[in-house]
Length: 473
Image 1 (spheres, rainbow, N blue to C red):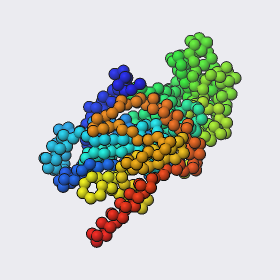
Image 2 (cartoon, rainbow, N blue to C red):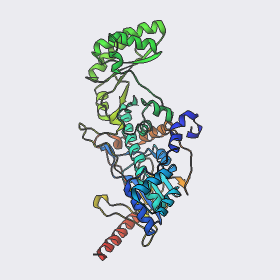
Image 3 (cartoon, rainbow, N blue to C red):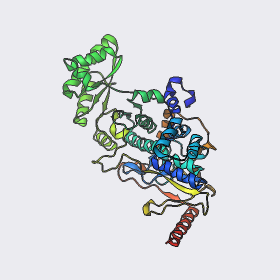
Image 4 (cartoon, rainbow, N blue to C red):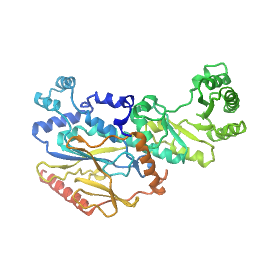
């Protein structure tokens, strides 16, 4: 199903975005740089690569996400009269430059890896070719949409992998800096549902949740609280750790059997949110089974990450599903695991400029040096290796191109898929990735090779720019 096939209410978010001009969704230095470019006539056709220098969380791979939010950002990139009046007051740009901004519509080309693709560091995830100012002004919005989404989708993929077939729900609305991106990317990464109701509505996602501690505390006793929930909802879940897990599960089982007999309401799941999750899950499972509630699932939450999930399951915890909040929706690593998270480290670099001189453009900065040229990425076989090479080179044998056209001459080339459809692609992609590259700790580095022609271009560009620097001294 595509976005255009959804019922009207399910595209409310996209329609709202379409009413929001995103021309000011830039960092100030982009506007100032665009002004300098305008004043000096530097606006030849340029190509920028968007990529990351490393994989997050100590992993080997990335799961690409955020392309559709990025394309929405580009589609809506324009300046309202109010925006232009603000820039006139605050910056005092030449009125003729403001007229150019007034007419701004993206006219270039974009190649991108589809969402749900497994990618690796230093591979272009997206390539923009357009007049210099157009491509430049898009930088921060593209980095935000793709960088944040890819970070969270990669985290979700690791969590789902660690859960080994058990469901993972995204519970992070209260922690997320951007809850829409977080809910969308988490499901793309393999999560079964989100607790964020507006996100579920906007993106046609399953929603899920249990009950809060406050609801239990509001009643004179835990048993009365459980009974109120069981009698109100025909399929319900209960939270067990408000007071004492052992007494709570006994009360929950008694209430569940009574209400099931009277009203046929089902206790779908119980949740543990704190304490010794291994010991408590064993106790809870035993009581449920002894009470004839073998179909009731045991869910856990509470500062979970992929490492803790893997540890619980390796220890034999009888857990059926996991709810993950801040660690997922903010894309966090953890001190215990020694991993870094929070940002993906995505960058957006000029690699080709058809102005005066050689068009190959390079940044010389040690480990942060860039690779010049208009490039494509190919996957050889079933994760044998990836090859990054120049666009003009013939495709390698037994290869699949990873960058696909998504915008051509400013026209958007295909309908947007739904996150749940992308989720299926993601799950299949991660499943095909060899286990040695999916290891949570110390994964094998995946081979990404650059063609000899690309290496030669980089050497030549490095020499030319080094010579030009020397000539000015």
